[in-house]
Image (tube, rainbow, N blue to C red):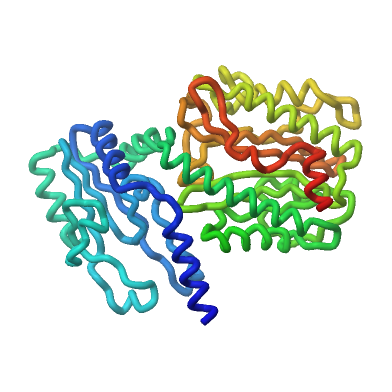
Length: 401
């Protein structure tokens, strides 16, 4: 009885989450045809490689394919051609495989067009014949790279529905961060903190957008640390970099926490510098700015962060702190936690990016990163993750509870 209730609760929660309407997917495909107007586009969805050698990992659709189709079953193919042609091809039914992975839609299903949102649904074995027929009237066949570049540009600016889903992922991430904070104290293992985060996501029908990073003490010097195997010690800092994925859209938030509940004077001094740099970056986010990646890049957010950190505070030798900013300070987020695009691309309204400066001083055993997500607006930026505290006093107060 309990197991049945749990399944029904998860299904109800999943259905309650907002999604992208089929009409929006159709509009995205129309925009891609405009970007590639002269020929045929063939895109392949991810295949299902789940098995003993792959650890039976959950299937994840190719993000570009998902962006255009909303289709989350493996082995599908998308065909697009001018002026308004499109077809979805899906694998034939395999009853033996479906015993292990669940029933899949086939082209023969009576509701295939309604479920998929495509007027033409075919079986994948007909792909070659259908492609050759289309090429009789369209001499150009776009390469995967052509399509990839065009889709990347489409994905950068988020629709209102996408912003809503990202905001939902951030809300769940904030609740999960707070749950993880309640585990932070000396003697607890990093994996216990990460487990509290992930458990909260699962309870809300979401999953990790990436492996949570619960990096304590020296582990926080590793920018993409993932082992989460060390025991937290009194007096050190914990960098918690973790985000939810809800309805396929990702969140990315980082907070730095004092394991003993209060920052030391030196930790707080450096923390305030990183926080000041983050605020300076957010103030600089606007259309026409760039994420970096070098200080020489025009309108660079990285330069804003470097200049702020380099002009505030010193290390033990009396040197400025700019050299301790060892990574970029922003990336795009959407269907992937790091949507792929050049950091030199000009920001535009509707883009969703991170702001994440940090200071890493191995000689002092101090690593600090603060990361929020912002929506680029016509005039500046809206902080989407503002509900999760980041002021030093607010963090200490939350840990005290």
